[in-house]
Length: 136
Image 1 (cartoon, rainbow, N blue to C red):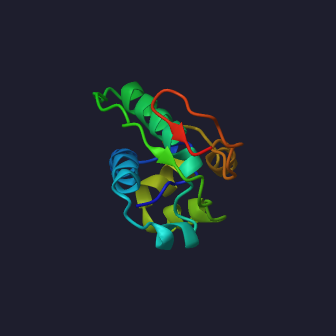
Image 2 (cartoon, rainbow, N blue to C red; image 1 turned 60 degrees about the vertical axis):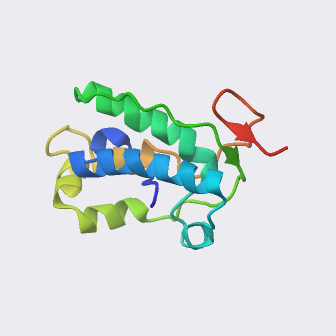
């Protein structure tokens, strides 16, 4: 499981849909109390970004004509983790299609917009809101 610090418009179909599923898996793991320490320590997950990332990925799915009918379950956010620098470049090494999108091939976006469009740092902790229960 991981969150890519990349603008969802620039994810290939496989990575877009995969990240959507993984946001649901993260919430399920958090709700079941499953340890995610390894994901936190490797910079793969920032729990403060899960809801916003799910919503951004879901919006992009709609833009591409996919049906997105799976709202994210409420979860208790332990406000842990960070996203490692360089993860976007790692994605391009792993996936030819994402690399093509990053270079502007299909979208006209440049590599700079790929990394600049998605936050790599965590937002300020939030109080409890609908679907997102923060530990006080």
